[in-house]
Image (cartoon, rainbow, N blue to C red; front, side, top):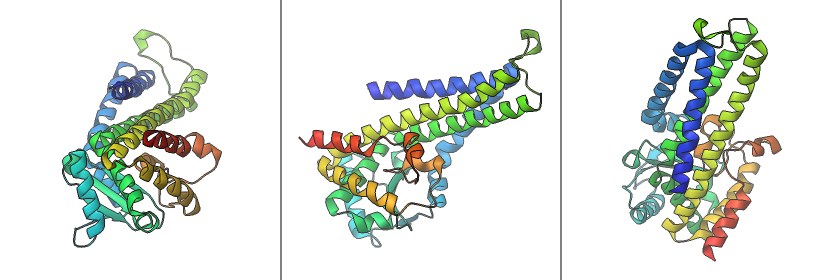
Length: 285
């Protein structure tokens, strides 16, 4: 319950940030436009996120006949989680990774790469699949996509604010409400706001990953299986990076698919693998 409340507060903060930027950009009218933009982005993300992300990574849904072992594991874990059977998809990528998508449990899809099927043992793969089903059970797919949409709206509006300041078209409020914020102030806010949005989105994503690890370990009844899988995936994803990975969808994957140095790690939507493994091993004890 505390985690759900924390997520609600963070999403509210993102929405208020959009409204604030809209107010600066165009007064009351700008605030209204920003709010409508956020609502439209949320609605589109909610209804079409599964189709968009599956197409983005060329994931193909498979039948029980085509992938019997994978299908059987997903079905058993879905029953254990009290969920309807989701669709199962395979991503044509050697990078070992997995994600779940879909606007609700009835429309959920669990997708795994070809690489993860070759890398993990049965118990490890069960742990990964249980983690993804935990995201479905906890409605993390909706939470994550809404957070990403709101953060994207903040960055879009901040970009408009920055260009408005550069070309002298910025006014911070309605004429009757007084003068604008000034070019320097507008530029500072245009730089700081996207960083704030990104940090809030990261906080949401990381908290949901921890929750999915915990819920997934209970679904599979094997925290060590998931811990071992995370250990292998962390190493393999660096050795075989997913070149087609996009920052906008990185939060969906069980481990961060983006390759990079310390800066990428610092601004990752995923919590540190070492801490996730430590928590899972503590659960097993």
